[in-house]
Image (cartoon, rainbow, N blue to C red; front, side):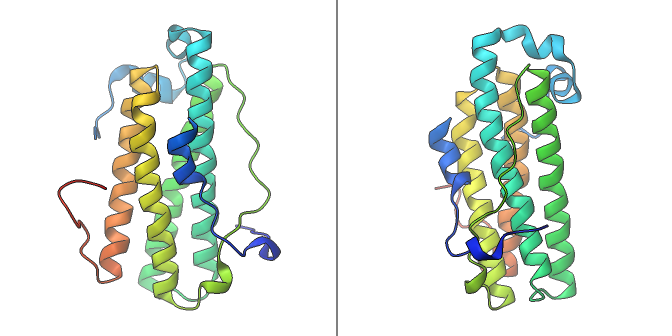
Length: 193
């Protein structure tokens, strides 16, 4: 993953902003159809409502692309042990899958997939140890959980809400694993706050 190193001075927060801009793990048949590329079902909600859903999906897509790039920075940092590197690459693959499904769903809803940003403002100058990389990744995953939790009720198409909940569950698992790797309680409370 390429990231413009000259613009890596501050942490970008689009995952958290997703909540303001815009958990079931089993998908319904309609949600699977939507995410598998069945345009007739996807357009059933109507053009205006679909346009709103597309805006939310494009914001989620930007956040997933950011995660892919962030895990690339971590993987290429040379700071990760073999085991942690394997987990980072696996999580990056999950985010790539999320991004692919989101882009496909946007097209199926008749929307235009937003262009990816050319660079991200990651704090690479602050990443000096494996723990720093893990904390950075954990903060992004926590932001993703918050973002998806905020977006779920905003979808007009409830099947998209169910699909977003499925992605939220994956993000929450990533966050828990990263917290555990940092020696923190992987599930710090009965409710997410």
